[in-house]
Image (cartoon, chains in turn purple, blue):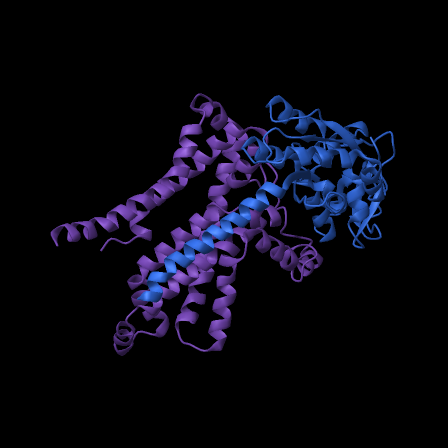
Length: 263
Length: 252
């Protein structure tokens, strides 16, 4: 019996260990293959820093936009049931399952120069999103916002409404009670949603290259720079990948209490 | 319980049967993996069908992408039997890496053209027009053959053009012209001609044009190189060349 119990208690850590290896090996592959002697020269080049800076700016903008637009949406979704909410929830979740390249084509057809809404934008303001930095942010927000909305909605649904009711009996308006009671209490979910949306935006490739193009120093984010480097210089591509991995890992580590609340 | 016990045996039998079937198939007809430049996708599908029709039991698997991307995949160990490149430089990369098993042979030539929206609404007549400030022009990246050729042509015409993006394949340029996202793109004449009703082609005169030369070779790490050799011979044969001509390619 004891031995069986030991086996059982070991089963979970063992499985976890094997699976951790599954995720660790690709990273190890990059580390082992990295041309360490050339790292300095690759990193010191202007285009790499441009791409990294652009990536950080655009992914942060996408995360902030996701939170600003996503919170009212999540609040409405969590406020009830019914087919309208189901339809909207499916619409919002769709970018998570769409292959990013398809998302990029769909964005072109909607917000591109010849697109449904983009055609008007061009006609009225002589401005079009594709091949611009705002285009990068739109593409990243489109794929990243669902992560925020779903996390925030889950947080709102698990929120005990009696707190809001108590606030109301004490004279708080719904607006006040939402900002002063609900939001602080579901803050862990909101922070987790922002970090996950930011991480998704940082790694975004398919929708970006399709919708915003790929021009060095302009719309070429880190993932695109890795893709281009892969065709010119594999070593440089590996260095760039490691930079992206290191930056993402550092941020996720620093923000660990935000996206994984330890109770 | 008896059913449950019986199942593993039945499963094993099924598995063995299916393995056996696969084994036989593999011995008889391992598919020939063909990597070809994106610009070759139109003629290579009928080329492959014609080859399969005259060589019973052979199956070709075609994979198209920007030439430079295909080279990366081969360098990283993709088991490819035949490689058809859109330029010599990328083929030479694989030769230098020792990955080519036969002498590369030129099988087609292709001129460049300017692709515009149907009816050419912006009145683009030559490469010189591409420098106009009111135009949004798109090229492939300089590592992609079509991008390199396009830059050579622009240099010949002494025109400076700012591409709005470095696209990964010539087909990506064609599709963005089709979608109306850009006013013009420099592509192969064959792409502009086969792009459908939404695209018009503006010819580039000979003194500014650059003719792409496409080499084909059998690679050294393929699984069915013997049939690969036959396919290369077929592409170079009269019948193969006729198919290529019907899509606007010129003989080497």
